[in-house]
Length: 310
Ligand SMILES: [Zn+2]
Image 1: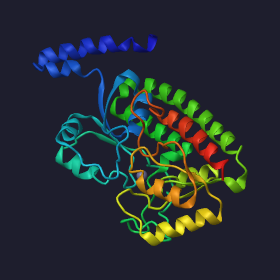
Image 2 (image 1 turned 180 degrees about the horizontal axis):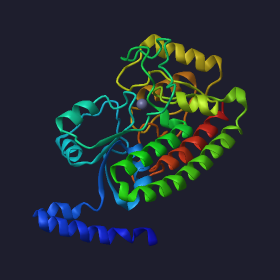
Image 3 (image 1 turned 90 degrees about the horizontal axis):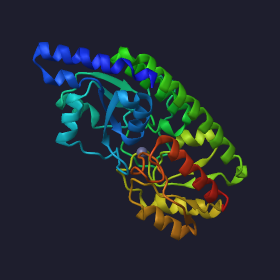
Image 4 (image 1 turned 135 degrees about the horizontal axis):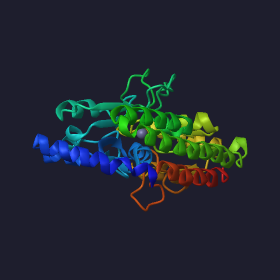
């Protein structure tokens, strides 16, 4: 492992400095302490950081970041971190208060920086969400092209926070980016196996706008981009009528939200509930979607199988 050779020397130097400074904590500074706001970007941060970065994730597997309530131990981790990695575009509504309260004094990396034109919320009013209608949709990672931008932002942010390891971050970032480019091609080839007029899916909340635009699938959801709203009876009835009219059978629940409403809609409209989709959170380690890449490898075949029944 030739790229690891600088580390022991650096550790020795730091150890010496710690002795001089009388601070044993400085001897443990070989790894960069980083906090990621939720599981998907925690995984991306690990991919780029490797063993040079110690990642703490605030909103873990199968948890809903929209409605998350930070804990005192989250504040402790944020206060100790040199790097805080967030999605941005309003996805983590609780992050500002947490960063202020901690307080966070390091480098913040906002992964949606550089997305020129974020998609906007559906302004049809069907969603009944609490945001203003000109608010951006934050679920940008569902388009792998944006995931690759996230990787570039992580590489740049880590390299700035830890210049001694910048080359290693760039190398790991380049390897990861190549895999994501291949993943993007694979998603397109899978969707292409479904006839164009069958590419329609019902999901629990409106988290797939970016996927829809990138890969040519129409998603319909009873609620909007956040999970903290209940749809009205009229909204649900309209969705069921549309499913019957357009022969939409592909219905999916999400790993991090309550499946009851979507299951009811599937029953009423004669649809079939497919496997859980991983949307705003990964599965637990060892589960079917415990990385960003595996999330697509799980979701896309499930979507394809569902759409072929439409
Ligand atoms: Zn969401």
